[in-house]
Image (cartoon, rainbow, N blue to C red; front, side, top):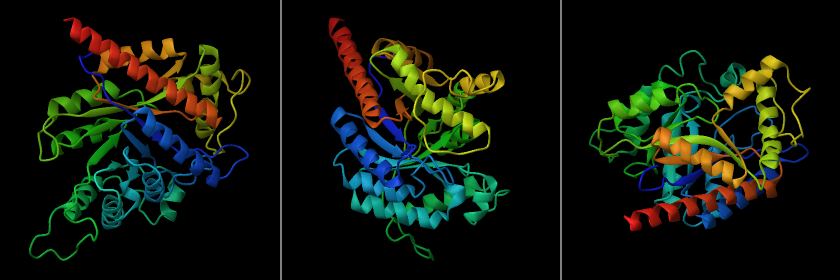
Length: 344
């Protein structure tokens, strides 16, 4: 582990629980964000997904505004906006509005996947074949709308033009890592659902990084499922809600987030178990001691600059407790590092 501890942030999918509503989800989201601010988390990001009955944050910029209005210091942003679903001008206007309302607190994380199925992509009025291919061009157009006005510019993002809205690239492969490196932008890898390309993406990003006006050296963040509880058994039980969600996804279905179960035996086939277990291998699940060991291993193996913690936990009180445990662990680890540095 390095001599300084990376910041911890939160990725929230604003889960819709079985038997609850989106309105309940938004209340829980704001409550978690307010606790996260008090616990010292650095940023609070929300993700764009469409046609998922278990995710409420489809209108991502609206929910970002809701969270930013209910907090005062924590950075708030998207993890991410799926740019192929949108006109770059509209996103510039939306995030220009957010930055104008909450100056210095807004992040714009961007992904190139649609975040949904092909039929819903068409319902979003996007071309499911070409949209991902045009991501670099759409990104360049979006960035141009935030740049200061120049003579001859015909289209202006009002608000947006001339505002400093940090842009992040999000990805689960080396594509966005390479693009982020070439443009000198911060990069976030979705290890929480796509474990295979983590080290390859980090290597590409760091090796090919070019300093820019935005960033003078590489800055990599990793999304991690962290399910923390007082005991390993309880954390593993809470984790079954996410396992059920992924199981439904590979069966091409969607449902609200389900309550945890004592065992997944009988709910999945051996092949389904193997697939879900692999896809969720970017997870740290357990008691405070277990989670701390997992974090220390992750820091040592990746040299990550920031951790983006996510946890699809059914019970809101248990979810708060999990994030509080993680925040407490960070404070303990930071104090340990400080004591070690002073001892030298």
